[in-house]
Image (cartoon, rainbow, N blue to C red; front, side, top):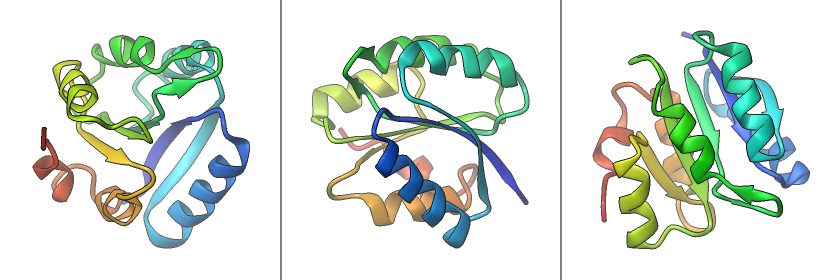
Length: 132
């Protein structure tokens, strides 16, 4: 089953790398990339019910991914949100889960687990990741 995703990260090089690996290792296909929280909010509205996975960083030069998380709280049950960030302290993780995130991954230490969870974001190990 193809999983349609939105990717939100301000590092263009990392976005290219993530897209390549996601396409090679999983059924995730990135519909579009946003490089700012404001652009991400527009993409969520643009694709409305069509996306199934939102991959979101929290740290941006111009804003915070938490504004995107607040917007994504109104998503449908088939829409999952994975936070992939390098600021994943227990406090940040707790805040993300309070806002309804499906899973939080540290990009420096949990990329393997992130890609594994992307293989099946509905029933895979992502639902066991709420470690705070």
